[in-house]
Amino acid sequence: MNSYKTGLIRIGAYLLLGGMLTIPVSCDRQQDAAVKPNASVGRSGRLDQAGCGGFTNGKFLGTWTVTGSRLQVLINGNNQYVAQIFGDNEFYIRGKEFLRRGDIANKAYSESQIECFEGDPGDAQGFTVSTFQAPAGFEPGPSGNSFRVSCSPRFGSGGTVESRVYIASWLGPDPDALLEARYFDNKWWVCQNVTNEAGQGRDAFIVRGRNILLRSDVGFFADPWDIGRRYCFAAGDSGTDGLENPAGTPTQLNGYTRLFFNDGSPYFLKNPQ
Image (cartoon, rainbow, N blue to C red):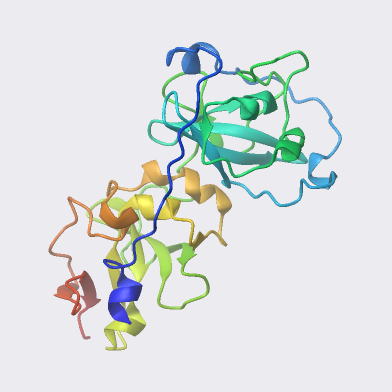
């Protein structure tokens, strides 16, 4: 059971479907056509429309094959937007017509659900949404005309390894699969609490790659915007969808001992008092 929960044999299979490019667009267009925030105008609540209630913040919509960008849902008030994720958790807002493109792979929406998203009248390509206004807790992205979720105050400076912040749960409500943010080595890290697995009655955790937050079997119950805060964490991506120990993880931690589970997964166990 431990090897299943701690992660080096649980591998998700992802089917990559090719798409046919129907509208020639250069990769540079993703910046040139990026939307600039303007005052939001009142719109009817799209969340209340038939067939539009099944979307949540961060829900995967597909992949734009021109740039390899993920498309995700962003809900602001009663309005739903298409966010094109690129770089280190930056995003541009795209119009609903963008979802009709022929070069969107792994589509996770139906043709009828496209109308659930915002768009500008007359925009046949969906590159801009002039009415978008970034919600509180967002900041301008470093690329210009882009946005990203702010790290502070949720993951601000300072903290301790034991004053962790709950992020999500991997594998549903399993108490041995809670994902937490912990602060040590002057950085924030994505960790899985394995106190029960260690069986010592003392705090224990595994450091995970931040890309574990992109797994389809991770549920965000504390703050759904944490899916956009991956750039706030020290560890980069790691193998097996973030389950493997990421490069740069410290091997020594004050007050803790580094041990290994039977499957080779390294974990930190708090020293006895």
